[in-house]
Length: 440
Image (cartoon, rainbow, N blue to C red):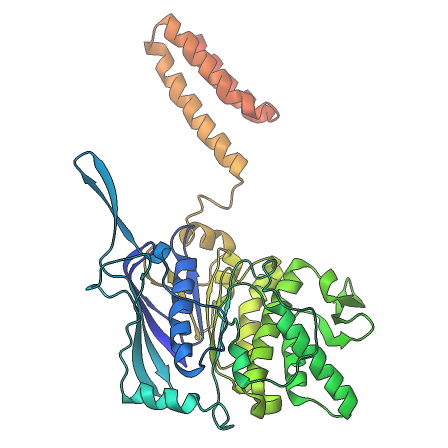
């Protein structure tokens, strides 16, 4: 399944907005408050709506329009300040599923009176294609049915954990457990740990290679630079990673890894384990053959700039049939998209796709992210503005009274004070003032 287009009407900061998505990787950029998380949340809401059609009540977390999602209109009537909810709020997507195109809409009915007790209405426009597909997917016992992955990873994925019992052995369950809490932006690492530990024990007990386990293990290792091996250590009762640190092979328990490693391993492992749960019949090919949609807020979270340049390519190579929609503030992530035909860079401030050119980090920061002259330090920029204000004040001196001149001299001294540790800067400006004083 792929989402081709998202339409938002009166949703949070968006009055009316339409976003085109790449079928492989879309990166959302924009200043704080431009709506990056809002777009991802909207996608999560409507994907949840779709999942409910063919996965009964096994998804876990609830995702729906809430009062805070409704866009309000501020009005002044007489002396009263009012905030009225917009008449209609909706999320709509155009999708492709097995070469069949359809649209899906979720939102409030504009004909209904808004009430906090009944704050949303699902609007579902089904046709025969959707009905047929959903009926087939709902037959979870048919091994020919490949279930698409759906997952959302929010900014709290490292520290915000879904409550669960620690590392218990995971018994047989439904394929649809792969959707449990899949759209909760918090992390569900313990479910993965339970699955991984169970698979390791089963492999040892039965003395056989567990194909899904090896596929998940390979996915973890392929995503982590310099990683050699990943396994569940029974003595430590924990996932351990063998990797190269400062030129030497080291084995590190998961809880002692850096935030960047734990963040990336946790996310990739969760994607891979869900794939193995949804489509166990694919065995060793489960990672390469499972389609799906993955939402990632701030994909650069806790990652070193060197790793930021690799993460998009590694995700696309590791999960070749997954559609990713991510947000980022990092110019390194933006720069890494150059030369890839399977990516799209969407600027929410201009509300359009922007070209991914071969630009330096400074050019990306300045031209696409609005950072003022990033090649120069902030201190240099402050000095430049102080010098400009200094010369402006100097130009006033000849034509003002003595009292005003005294005020301007004090103003000049105040401008110099923050840069007292830069004698060259101070000397140049003082020479200019002496020249003005000498002439007048």
